[in-house]
Image (cartoon, rainbow, N blue to C red; front, side, top):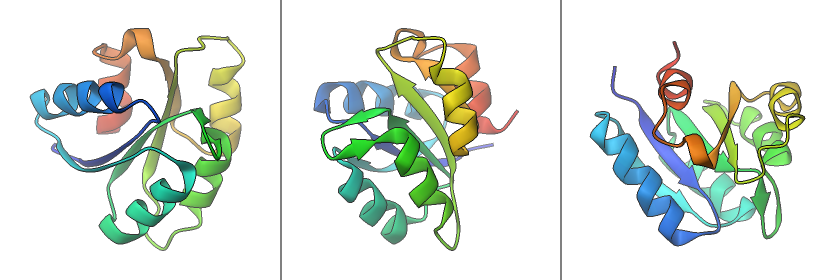
Amino acid sequence: MARTVLVVDDDASFRHLAARVLASWGHVVVGEAGTFAEAVARASDLGPDVVLADIGLPDGDGFALTVALAALPSAPRVVLISSDSDPVNGPASLRAGAVGFVPKDDLPGALLRRLIEGG
């Protein structure tokens, strides 16, 4: 099932790469954001099904972003990503309310696809 996705990362080249991967899976990337504040505003305006967000943002972190997105009237699923594959990121992501964590190195992998698609 196709999902609408907002991609949040301060690295524009990574956002574009993630958008291409998601589109190749049949999803619609409705927007991109490079900061915490921009992500909240874009999610409020666009109402995506899913937000794929980096843990490290210049004005906040993905854990706090997950909490902020959960407070929206139509809260999206949140999948957190990071180049830091520290094993504590997975449990911390779940505690914040995300559906999971995926290291950026695993971007095109099956785990990310399952988390995006809700399986």
